[in-house]
Image 1 (cartoon, rainbow, N blue to C red):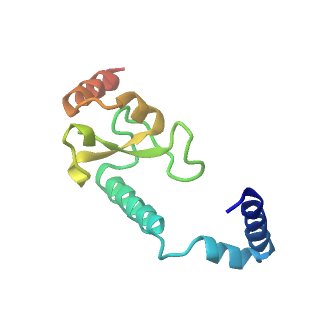
Image 2: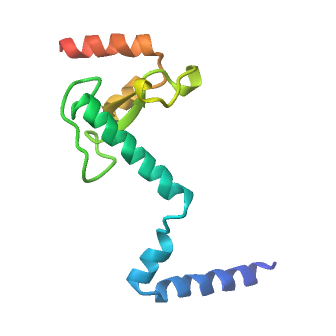
Amino acid sequence: MRRVEKVVIYKFLTDICLNLGMATKAKWMFMPGQHWFYARRKKADKVTALRERDGDNCWLCGHKMRFGGIPNIGKAATVEHLQPLSKGGNGKMDNLALCHLGCNKHLKNFDRAHKEKMRVSRKRD
């Protein structure tokens, strides 16, 4: 296919998407049958279960987390693997904890024993 044909097809599809009504466009973009829809729901269920188990405080520093609003702020809740997947960890609930986004970045890819030491030293502050 030549470049001109690709540009015309892209323009045609873009125009179709823009001409759809907002409700139709939203239905078309967010179909429940898509894989990412179920992955997002599964992650939300894990976060809910972890919240019920551990509460609303960060695993590392113990401060409150934000569960609504902007997902990339420093106090947003993220799921942390205590034993990293690259070092033999798994995705089961006993290996997961909720952390702030910033705290999760500090934990990096360390093993569970090192993360526990970091937690103890952080709690003393």
